[in-house]
Length: 294
Length: 289
Image 1 (cartoon, rainbow over the protein chains, first blue to last red):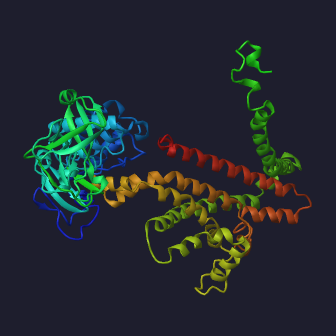
Image 2 (image 1 turned 60 degrees about the vertical axis):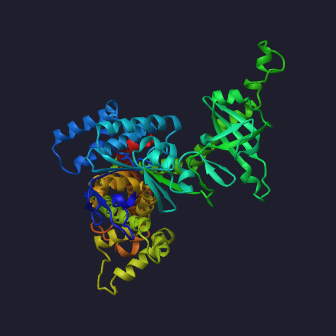
Image 3 (image 1 turned 60 degrees about the horizontal axis):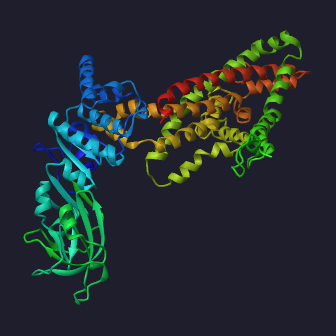
């Protein structure tokens, strides 16, 4: 992200924006808008002055600045707060102000570094939906870095999964979910559970009272009712292949009706079947410290 | 007996009010003793001695006071002191901020040593500072730069003793400064001069003024480092503190010295109040964050 913005120089590789090689350009000449994780607001300036900054340093005429600032404040719904200082704004308002400040220079690329990371869950969710709608009005390519898979899936048209600096897969949220290229992407994008060393989506795992071909015997540990979704935690019977205790735990995602029909209770003996054609992969060695880019 | 039960509250209700866990005496102590100690200590150490000087200043009556302050030599000394203090403060605020910048933002071998050298003028007895300056910029200067007995020498000595104030006031604020804001500004199209002027300096200004206040106060009262290098020439390099000492030496009464002391004190007070008001104005938008 910082390399794209020109705040850091890459050791290898080049940066292209709209086909132009910008690797050697200063940040100000790249046509980017950068929103920092902690907003990086100018605390000694009012909201209006913050947003106007990009045009003022470009020495645009005063009436043009006034008009564009008013437009953008309206767009980010801060038109009533123009005379306030950043310290007088809520977290969500600060983030929206940072967006307005970045958008006013009409960047070719908008860079958002974990834009919702510092906000509480509810505000973050609201702002995500707003950001998505904003892109119907302002057509700007946006690169958003996040550690929150759900956020990435919700906001982005295209996702790039990066694991320890390595690009694992690029695709639409649906492609990544349904056709992960490897187990890392499968387990990282969306929920996953392992059964006999293979990973599955929990909604592709079904639970039955009667055995079926290829089914595994298991005991119910816990049933959690989450509204429409019912989560069944299971412990598979050891198959004698010497697998470790942790590998025996799995979970299935059932809908409410199915769960009601089965009437599962902790301790019940069940048979677990995995759906044909569901994405699966060998259990990966480790899953820690991953970044997804949207 | 608690107020609660007296008012008919049920037995066993937690006792509040005067009968609560904190006894009345304890609370009175908390309310009065701590501020009381502060006031008494401050009075004994600062206020009463100053009041005594003020009273002494008028020992020879109002005309005596005015005569001591407004005689040409004292007046020249006061003017020299104020002008020199202001000149040195302006120079040191700029230089001190630059040094703080280097200490915070740059990495270089020997940085720790440079950082402690900044504090040296604090640690050195001022008379030693004066001697050091004299050996370097005096009659035997290895650079043939004789500042002894000149106003330049006065400025040199004042700059030497006030530098740590300017550096140390800015340094912590600079270290805490939001670097992202600077990067945001440059990504928005600002060049580095604009970033410095529009983003960095406004954030540093209150701290720079704080340093300037301390440095000014120190420069107004400086004595030790000036004894040797200034040459103590009336109408030329005799600053207020030296003039006060000379008045004390030459007069049978301490009143003339006290009178000039009081004048110096009042001028310092007014200038510091102006600085303080300016600083509050500059810092206003940020105080609520």
